[in-house]
Length: 234
Image (tube, rainbow, N blue to C red):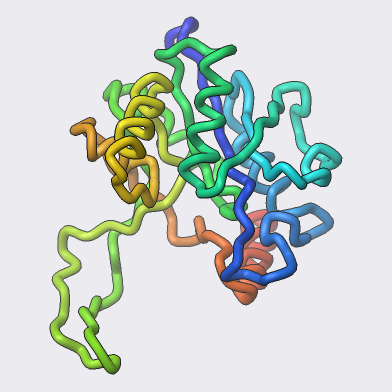
């Protein structure tokens, strides 16, 4: 990496996680004495980050009390109504302290199992090709297109399909412009790559691992617990 080009991480952590629980935030559930968010941020800190920006909710008094590694590199900003607004708020915050050509990794708060090897591979690939990149895995299962009353219409070819994961990596100026442009045009943005695609930025997929799960439902927490246990024992 060029010495002048820094690497930053952004973690949108303002979501309410309504599919997980109406009353509990998934990023603050505990696994092995640490919250999901602590696991997630500490994984990102295995990289040589210039800093990590957490976008948190206005009522969140808990995040700043947690035991993160490299707390001196941690920044907080206010999240937004949706994930995309939280990411954009973090990028606006970063614009004040980072260079527009610095690289930014955006990672889901509820993906605590991403491996150090995958993180490094993503960073190395993006920098080597000077191109935005995301972790993703090829779709393995047979996919069905289902219409009304749960009736299968047809089987969808999975040959060219990949399942997007995070982190997703791009240069600060490019990603900020992509999100602002897509939002201004009322485009539905499900991840950073979809905004980059909208402004015709090339995005490369870097093959990740199937254990880089996103905790969405309550039973995913138990799966994440087992994955972390297995990873830590190797």
